[in-house]
Every structure is written in structure tokens, then in C-alpha cells.
Length: 361
Ligand SMILES: Cc1cc2nc3c(=O)[nH]c(=O)nc-3n(C[C@H](O)[C@H](O)[C@H](O)COP(=O)(O)O)c2cc1C
Image 1 (cartoon, rainbow, N blue to C red):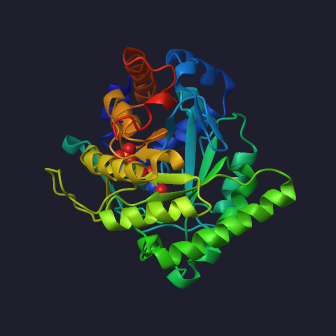
Image 2 (cartoon, protein in one colour):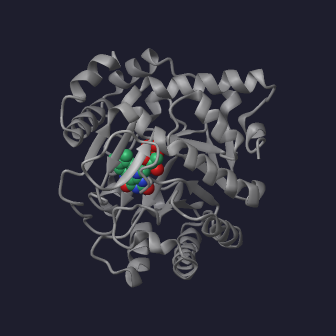
């Protein structure tokens, strides 16, 4: 069925197709019976082998929706019906959000199974996301990815992140700190040690304050990294993360590199999908090599099936995420990956997915 839908969608402009799909997804998400039909069609079922337990985190399975697909949480109740173990919404910025860059800002590179985007954090703002999340029906764990507004100078970025965190805090099961989108000027500078110390320091102070006031545990906080960092930078951030109030790292965001693609994109921006897979794996492996199991790592970038998913887990990812492959393969991808993971874990004699994490490093 998705082949048919896809041929229709792929004839539309990429962003128009995205908007249309998300609108339909939101419609399904609001209908109880449509959700039930969808889950039974996709044969969503429990898979004890795949249960994930992390510090302050528990997922039914390790596969999550990556940030940026449902930035404003328009279809939060749909993602569990597809079989995901968790979802990440955002990136959101403070206040009423922002429009993002002007178009064209999204392009498919079909033969390369890739996407280039320069969206620039178009979003309706953190308070609006909090509203959406607070009225959700499902209890699928949700990570909220936060960022800074385009107009906020880098030296005041911390205020933006803190404001966004404060808005969504109550509704988040974990917080992803996005310092790696290539489409907001200067954002990736926040990956340097001096900025990181202040940023993570202030966010963790706020996190602890909110936790104390609500009489519950602070939210796990993870930092999302760019694949274009050097090895030295990756090592530095890994060391920093282990010493800071961070639960883990998310590797990786989109890349500015154009290695591995045959088509020439007509827009600038971050590349995602199949050509990113090898680099995202290398970054993950490097982090795991240094951190062992002291950080909870989420692997993302070019995962397009069970084989890649399993490899990412064996390279150190306790959880994984997909975006681009979902565009190319449709919602059946989720169950394909979960089933394939189960089969591989079983074949290799693991009794839970956690036992396979990092075995190849
Ligand atoms: C159109 C588009 C928008 C994205 N927006 C965000 C975003 O707002 N925040 C973020 O952290 N990552 C964003 N990402 C990056 C993805 O979350 C993911 O890290 C990246 O696409 C690599 O995974 P993939 O190869 O499975 O797509 C976006 C990706 C795409 C394709």
C-alpha cells in the first residue's frame, strides 16, 4: 500500500508532501478506531526481548522516531500505533516559535535514499508543544528536543534553552539538547567546551530545581551531536558528558558533508539517510570506545532496516532512531526493524537487547 501512497507523495513538492502526511497522521492519531485498525494491520505486538531499561528511562523497544519529523507533536498518538518504543519531538524554541528558513528547504535525493534539509527550526514554540503533549492519550515515552531561536545571539543561547526546557519540562520523559543542527547560524559552536559547560550547567540546575519542586527525579538529559566533529572533538565531548549531568549522547544529526551521494542537491543544508550511515556508525563507535557503558547512547543516521539497526546496537547504541528511511519505506519499516532485531538477537543467543549493546567495540 505504501508504494502507492509513495508514488503520489513523491510527485508532490517534498515539503508539501511532508505537511500533507503529517496532517493525515494527526487525523488518524485523533481517532481511536483508526489507530486500532492501523496497529492490527501493522501487527504491533509486545516483544520482551527488545525491552530497554536505561537510567531513568524505560522503552518497550529500542526504536524511536527521530527529532524533526513531528516537531510540534501534531501526531503524538500515532507513533505508538506504528510500533515505536519512544518518540522524540522538536526541535522547539521558546515562546511562539519561529517560521524557519524560507523555501525551498527540503529536497529528496531519491536514488541516494537521502534528504537534504535547511528547515531552520520551524516550530510553534515550546509552550504550544507542552499543550499538545499534555492532552496526549498514549503513554509512549517522549523525548523533547530543544534549541535556540535563530535571532538569539550565541552568547544568550542559554536563556533560550532554559526557557524551552522550563516550558516542556513536565511533559518530557527525556530532554535532547540540540547543539548540532547545521541550519541555525552558530548553533554548532555550542559543541565547544566553553559553551557546553555553561549550557549544560544551567540546564541541569533548572532541571534539578524543577524536579525538587515537583518532588520527582530530574529528567534524563542527552546531548545531540553533529557527525562533522573531529575525533578530538568527539573525545572531548565524551569526556565532558561523563563528568557532567548528562545521561547520554545522541549520535548523530545531519551532515554538511556530501560524501557518498551521486546526485547534486539544489539546496544547501544537512544531509540525512543512507549516505550518513557509515559516518554515524563511526562516531557512535568512537564514543562507546571511550565511554563504555557509562553513557546511554542513542544511535541515529541512515538506519534503513534491521541489519543497520542491529549493527548500531552492537556498536554501542542502547536505542536507535529513524527519520529518512521512514520517508522512503513507510510505516512498515518499524515492524520490519523490530522483527529483524528480534530474529538477530535470538540467532546470536542474547536474551535481551541490552546484552548486545556495544559487543562489537
Ligand atoms: C527534514 C528534517 C528535519 C529535521 N529536523 C531536526 C530537528 O528539528 N532537530 C533535530 O535534532 N534533528 C532534526 N533532524 C535530524 C534527524 O533527527 C536525524 O538526526 C537525521 O536525519 C539522521 O537520521 P536519518 O538518516 O534516519 O534521517 C531532521 C532531519 C530531517 C530530514
